[in-house]
Picture 1 (cartoon, rainbow, N blue to C red):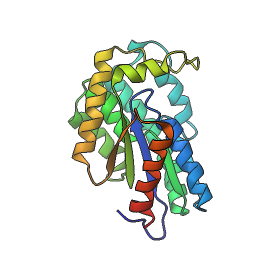
Picture 2: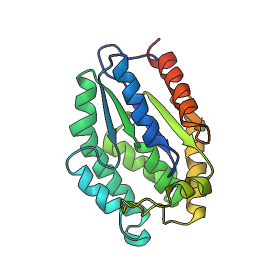
Picture 3: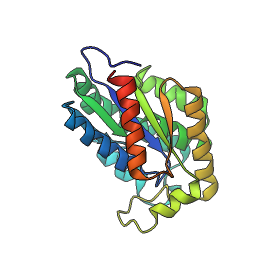
Picture 4: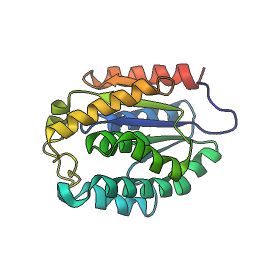
Length: 213
């Protein structure tokens, strides 16, 4: 997969809670800046006006605040704003965009974790933004229990999904791995148990090989 001429590249970071993807997405953005690539670092849910308001609705409160259908519709409403107001304009301007979570998270969390099913989530996905997809996706993999241990002690209030039971997080992990297996040209699975420096080195090598060579 080569860098597209005249347009930016879109890279996404996916994985369960506590996998370290937020740290690694920031480090990659810093690296791209050193090689003179204009880069926008963003996140989901959020990343645009309206989408950030929906984020608060989704990631705070009690576990049963929303069911799987409601969550999926809210995530896609937020994503539509994110694409329309942030991602697509940046790519059209030739910038690279790195997003901490994107559509694979909705498929994994709602389709697999909450049991809505792949087909239902995919139909909503297709209606929201068609065949648009990232150029490259890093999926951070680690045992669910380890990820949850890493998130303990956070005090930002954005813990609604972390409060879901371990079986949910196990299904979530399996979902991400199945997504990666179905999309080998786009997805790279990263062992999130490795040291931060080793992971970032691997990510930079992959980006250089796939998008900058």
